[in-house]
Length: 393
Image (cartoon, rainbow, N blue to C red; front, side):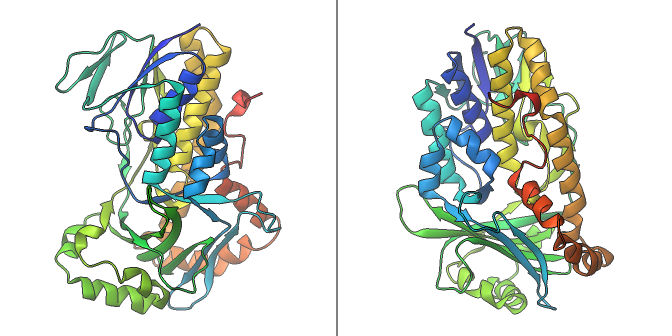
């Protein structure tokens, strides 16, 4: 059965859902609010479960050609110099299991190309405001034709989703810089912390579209309301503080000349209890929001897209398929949301006792078998089956 499907949002999740569903023979139109679909943000890590979805839509090879393999997440406390985070993707070093550090622009190009090749129709400059009886209404355009199914993939600022989220007290400024001369390994996500009120990191994120220059995504955490004060603080003061805490950070700051090269990201936490309605599916950040601490945001959107496509593949009744989609994703989303809620304050908060617990109890325990293997599966995204009974067969 071929369906007429409308998607609100041409981000990673929306485009992946479009590619998968168009590939199944459905007629898919994807509406985006921008003049032309484009990515928002800096670098991120696509975990092994996300790479499987990229491979399924034919975007995996292109993503790998622009991204950078990450084999280890390593963090230390800036004052004591002690390791407080150490997670390997594959301790055997056989290169089979890894995260892919990639710039959002490169990832977006790969997924956009896959969606277009699958036959998705993209319509720009359409900001969705409400859905009603199979139609999508837009801020400044006529109402859409009637669809058999609408997918809300419009992200954290969705006007279609009823999600209620709690703002997290800490966010971060992000920027993209050329990879400099440095002793930091090109296959590590490297981080440094001062207690929990300072966190900085370097993610090797491959190359930008049209370029072969290796890039790094850099980040510096701060309270969510501290950005205005940072903007009026001389850059040299910030650089001096950062490099005093972590001298290895200094080469990555050399090309930062203005405040606007770093973009503030604020986070919130919340999950829709029911990520679907009558002929409506809600995926990605429209359905669940969390800190990026576990690096699962884009992966969750990709997994939602795959679960939805699998549910529609095996069930003709749309609303029954939507129930199967939600059931398949429920426990994976809940567990990762809970883990994110538990881990984030240990690295981004004003707490004085949580960093001590992290450094002197939790980290030592994390290095005792079988915990390292559990942490690897947690980061890889397959601590439990991410698609439940809808795992492709």
